[in-house]
Length: 270
Image (tube, rainbow, N blue to C red; front, side, top):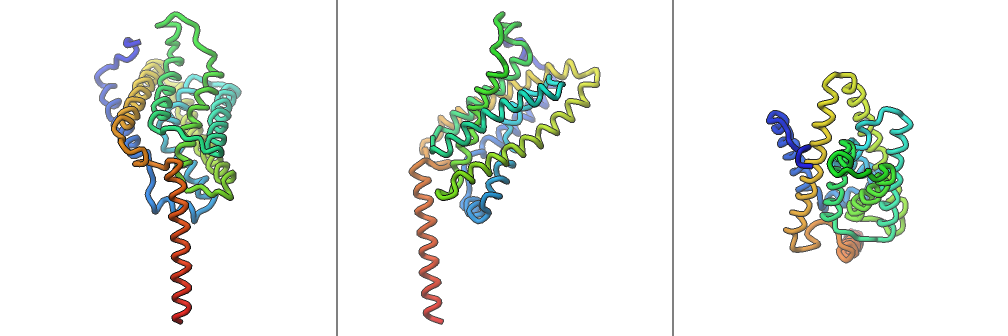
């Protein structure tokens, strides 16, 4: 397998640049400011939809995985089939885990998602046959399984938001709709780029380099998440734990009660 990770020097330079960008995005990928939380509360379901779309468009791990799925697909029917498998997988666990408040460690689940990127690229390079001399697992079913894992990662992000207990299901649906809209937009751009690039003679060597890059990027993302996990001593330092999430709602209720009291005092003075 190491043989497929040998890059020419000139390719290694842009690889380091892109990996550096991935490091920055992952380093600040968890957590949310108080101002962001308040804007979500005020924005309602449209805000959840917007966050879902922007999260997908800025989620390098999800985008790299989708890019790997469609890289060698040329027929519209195949594209729809495999993307639908991924969509069903991540939508199922996103909705179920969030609705039932199933908590997973975001660093660990994102590490596995990084490995999923490496997996899809390794399958694209026919690595199972070439390097291990075994038949590759059914790709469609593997995409469904990996989609379930991506859905858990998306759920950790959604559960960081101040979700409404009375409107929880619609919050989840709105976020998921935003995820799908962001995925469609990103997918459209990828397909346009690949369609034009396939007509060039350089596509064949590019395809090998691109998938080798996905393998390196996937392992890099995994290592960065494991690094983050090993250095977080306070589990509530980023995001919401179940207990912290309840405390957030208590704090917001106290703020509303204080504001009502201040308004009452102000009215009595007037």
